Length: 600
Ligand code: ADP
Ligand code: ZN
Image (cartoon, rainbow, N blue to C red):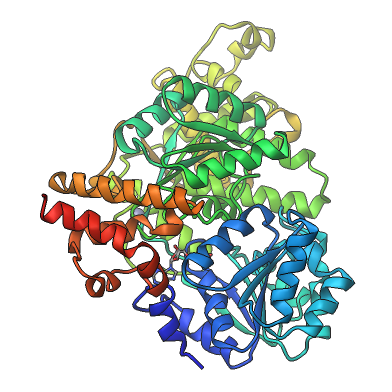
């Protein structure tokens, strides 16, 4: 039996296990079950791939992501692993061939779609084969509360009944407690060892900005910081996805749209291009991203507010899986809160479900409006403590300026009260600023004692006050009443002058924050070698018909630039270079480096 560590080094080319990988692998190798919660990019794949290689027989990976199986299998093959997949994209002949390999014991890893697995024919096949373990990837798909629910996943409990001696591991990046409990229960994993990974993603820089001129803000971010980099831009609606992608193209970017309303082939095509070409920007709804394990996504930008902190964390987690610096940029405004509130209110769930949705949205808004370290708040949300401010979020890098907003808050809250708690932010601010517009006149709000008492602040400043009071639950936005503002019980001490409140000052922010966000930065004199290595990778990727990162990750190329290995022995020491890749790609890269060091 080859040891797990040997496989880590020789097959995958890595020196050491990360986080809890070793314990998880040991558990499975010893025949135990496991439930693994690890953030995106934490390294879940190795947790089942290595035990599958250590144990006798073939590891069966259940994944809902049919479109990605080919790439996952290609990546394993490049590392010298005998892998295959079974899903509806295969012809009868191809499927037969995979089945033959499975039965003859040639396969080490087999990826199967859940709907395929639960067919009696497939189960029968597995009964006749030797199965080393079952890995249930994206295990949160069993949760009926989540948005990724798949009915087929519910039936996976039969694995335990039909294969009682085969170890099972369920993996997900979804962190909340209720989903975890649901997974354990539905998949019969209560007795399994539970591994809750550390949730921090230190290489991701979190930045949350107010929408001022969102397109301008985005453009500046892309031009100044992310030129030529791959990234994902999330929008709430399909329409906005298409408009944004079109506009980015007209600005000279390589942007592609992705949402559930596009024909399946087109979606697939865009996904392929995103994976295979350098520097593509994917503009997408949340339909895009689950299981996309492209390691070199350098940024994730949100042009609309995500509906929960979990969603935000999962979506931003798709940046920087390779551990290199990456940026998560979120632009938000008050109208997002109203829109999402309306969506939650009109959704199909019962009252309890709607209340939960609202609470989630409030937590998200709270994250946007805090003035202290974002990462500390994020991690606290997932039950973890970060002792010191992180130094790599916008609040840490450019501490927000605060001001005593008690007086302004009192004015606003009174005005909401005087206007009958029936109007949205725009109208309330108009009254405060003494506007003479038709609506103000129509409701005779110029007669109110709060009319015109807020001329000292601009419309934008007032909107910021509203947002912050909503975020801190002094005010509620009523989604059933077109975003009408309502007072909550928490207001009283403020109105009575017993409590003061510090608010964040609105400073239209511009430009990048720090060189740390300028990811993959290569020293000036190294750029020619870096480009030559990337060109070599591209050529090999095309030759083998795989995405460039399947050949080597950016991090591996960067280490080559630093170490300049000239022999196979020193090349093998570089992280990400295993035996099979050395054999396949080693000469080509060594030649590039030699030519650079000793030009003819
Ligand atoms: P997840 O599925 O948890 O999102 P992956 O399994 O895709 O994460 O791993 C994320 C990245 O980290 C991959 O590029 C992988 O090759 C790399 N990785 C995983 N484990 C290690 C390790 N022990 N050392 C170095 N890199 C690792
Ligand atoms: Zn911070």
